[in-house]
Length: 254
Image (cartoon, rainbow, N blue to C red; front, side):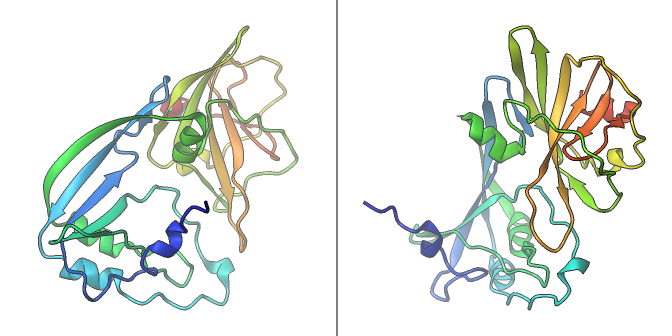
C-alpha cells in the first residue's frame, strides 16, 4: 500500500481555508531544551495558544513574493529550526499551515510570531528517545563524527554560515564515544579571522563537530567541521586549510 502524500494533504503554502476559524494553536519546539543527551534522549515543549487569530491568519494567507532575478544577492538562510504549528477550530479539526515566502524563497514566519504573541494557556514537556539519524536531522551533526579532509581552500568571511549546534566526541582506544549535542548561539562570529594552523601531529582526545554551509546561488550540502578541543586545537573544515581555534571558540563548544 502506498503511503499518503503528506505534503499534498496540507494546505497550499501560506493558506488557511476560508471556512476554518481557529480558536487555538499548538506549537512544538523541537529544540526547547537545546540539548541531546549522550543516551540520545531529548526534550521538546508543546504550547497551546488561545486568543484572536485574525492577525496570524492574515499573515499566513499573505501572498508569496516573486523570485528575485539575481538570487546571488540573497543572504544565507537561517539554520534555526522553526517550531511546528497546528491550528485548531471549535470542532476539534486541525490543520498544519505552511508559510508564504519572500523573493529569496525564505519563509515569512510572521504568522507564527503572531500566534506566539497570544496567551500561552498550556505547556507540556515531552521526553523522546532518538535514533542516530534523528540526532543528525535535529542538530546537523551525528553520533559519529564526520572527519574533514584538509584542502587548499581558505574560508572567506561572509561566504559561509556555521550551524549553531555542536556534537561532542571523545576518542579512546575503544573508538569514538558520543558525548551529547547542544544548540548554541551563533557560531559565525567565532569563525572570523582564524589564522592558518602551523604543522602539528598531536592527536585530539576530545572534539566538537558541526557543519558549515557555503553561500551561493545554488544549494550545496553542508561540509563537516571538527573542532579539536585538545591536541593541536584546530578547526578542521572539509576542503579547507586547517585554522587555529581561538580560546573563545574552544570555551564555547567545550
